[in-house]
Image (cartoon, rainbow, N blue to C red; front, side):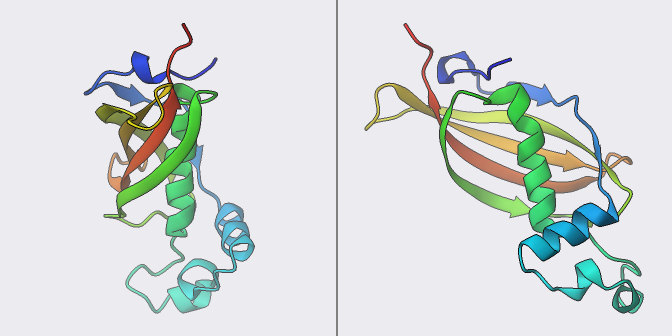
Length: 150
């Protein structure tokens, strides 16, 4: 199903995304290796035993990727021109191997594009929760979207 066009969004609209994702150790190690991130907090279980967490934490960039990626199917698949930026990215609680994410998205702002009359700008807030409904990630995403064809 194609995503929503700029004209179809409403400020305050909230999407509860049906896709849930259990994050595995393989996801975390693979992503950390793929992005050349050797931080022991993500890939060294023995080191992590000495930290306040006692075990590896999921790479925050992977958390961000899941948070935004899971939202796309319900919101902007096929209607996005480009992502313009991510702001206020926060991770208030750590995400661990075996945690299951669920995501919600709220439309915060809509504005006309001054330079591209066939497009509009939407600011979304994406929120990621673990299986205990604890907020583990939040960000604002600004996207340039197509207007609905005439």
